[in-house]
Length: 319
Image 1 (cartoon, helix red, strand yellow):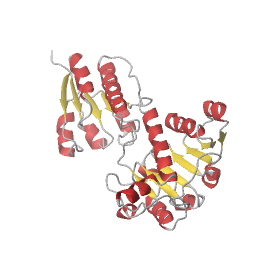
Image 2 (cartoon, one colour):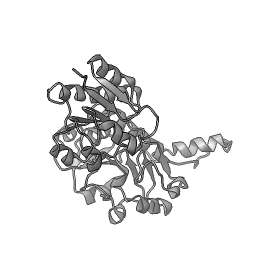
Image 3 (tube, one colour):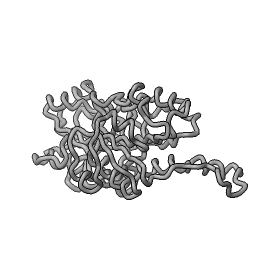
Image 4 (tube, one colour):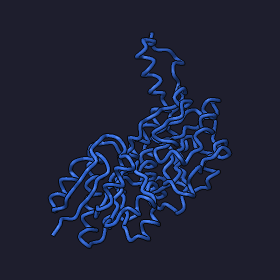
C-alpha cells in the first residue's frame, strides 16, 4: 500500500516534516527561502493527499482544481485570505489554520511597534548611529506616553484581546470595535465597545486586528482615516489591505497623525517607495509571529491537522 503524500509549500521548521514522517507519511517540501513558483506548486499538489501552505501561496480555483487527491489544506498562518475557502469546501477539502499559537507573539509585536512609534525609537537609533548625539537636551525627540491615553482595538479577537490586555498594563483606557461583545476584555479592563467612527475619532493609539475579507478590505479608507486625531498612532499587524495605504501615506506626509507602525503592507512584499521616505513610521518585514517557539508551534499544529484529517479524524483547528 502506497504511503499518503504531504506536500509542504515552503521552508517551515523541520519539526513538521519530522512529525509527518514519524507518522509514516511521504513528505516533500519546497525548501527555497522564497515563495514557490506557481508552476512548481501546481506540479506538486496534483497527487498530494495533504498540503501545508503558506500565506504567500495563492490557493485559488485553478490550484484547487489540480488537487486530485487532496483532503486537507493546512495553512501555516492564522489568516486564510490566500485560500478560496468556499471553493475548497465545494471540493470536499478541509482547510485549517494556526490560531492561538501565535497570539502572544503578535500581540507582543503590536505593543513593540506602539512603543517604538510613541518614543521615536528608530529615529533615535539612527540619530545616535550617525554620531549626532551631543548630549541631553530638554526638547530632544519628545515622544508620547501611554498612561492615561485611549487605546483603540479594531477587531477584538484573540490577538486584539491580548494586545489590549498588554496596553491596559501601561495605564491606558481601552475602547474597541468588534462584531460581538468581548466580555473578557470588558471585565478585565473596563473596556467599552464603540462604533467604528467613535473608535477612530477618540483613539490616541489604534491597533488593527481584523482578518482580511470582503468586509474589511479597505476598511480604513480615505474618509475614515480623516477621522483620526492629529496625535494618533496607528499600528497594523493584521493585513495591509485593510488600510488605504496611499491615503495613509498622504496623512503621514502632512503630519495629520503622529506616526504609524507597519508589519504588513498593501502590496506585500512590494512596499510603496513613498513609505520608505517617511521619518514618522516604523517598518517591519511581516514578523508578527516570528519567534522560534511560535513558528515551531505553528508548524506542529499544521502537521497535526494534516495527520488528523488523513487519519479520518476531526481537524484540530478547521477554518
